[in-house]
Length: 385
Image 1: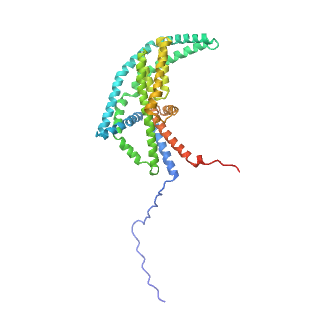
Image 2 (image 1 turned 135 degrees about the vertical axis):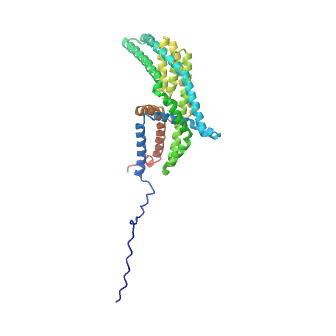
Image 3 (image 1 turned 120 degrees about the horizontal axis):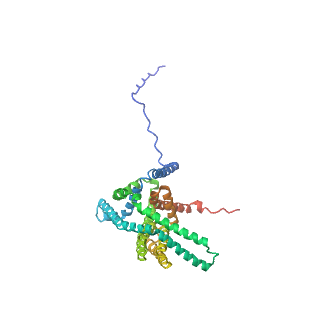
């Protein structure tokens, strides 16, 4: 029996051992990964807002300006104007208009505040006398059981306290306004940041869109378009209301002879961006000042009529004919968002309140539609046998 010859063993290879390629990554993201992405992004955003809230205000304000001016810059670009030049021109015009308005109105407002400080004791006494006279007439009509001396004293003291607080608060706000808003930040940082944001706005949006998860990109784009439509309609409507009502109240109150008509009218117009709160604040301030200045009910009723006309124009002309049904933010939701943002992040939260309210409202309506189309809602009730 013959043996087969033995083959020589292969020589040992030199170098590192062979490595197998790593297993391929899964082609589909898991539900846990999607939830982790959303929670991580939201948590990082809130942490950054909390961490940098002291320096974010000028950047958010510049982003608001760029958002407003982007449609105009886009139209100028389509007409052949370079985007950078269009952005510079728009920011320059806006800053020039703001500076001219400040130079025109700020000295006049300071002069009216000086009048208020000088005549505040006389105003308080006049308001007390007018209220006492009105309550005495009311007591004669209704009887002492309904209106007594204690109620008269309480009403007079409260009205005087409100007028004194109004004078002190207005003086502090107007007198400290330059320090509050930081001249350097408004004049230098905001225009520069707004210019660069406006110049690169379309490119930044395209870059953000390219980062959207491919699986949900279409839905996220639609939600972003809906939020943009709601937010732009609301902001445009509030800008029109603030400008129109501020001009109307300032001119009408000045014509009516109210010494602080310009200040109260502009304040009521600016605060109109808080639904109902701005108009109510301006109304109370104007009525109290009219009671202190004129001392008769006829002139006070003229002031009341001015605010009634202003609210009628806002409710029956500006909103129905200029905006229609495009504003889908309920007034209560806006007020809550503004106060919640102010409590959480101060003035920065007020700036971010409306965009966040618009986005949350759009997402809530989207999930409501999903719920109404799902078996959770459509599943028929069980019938007992």
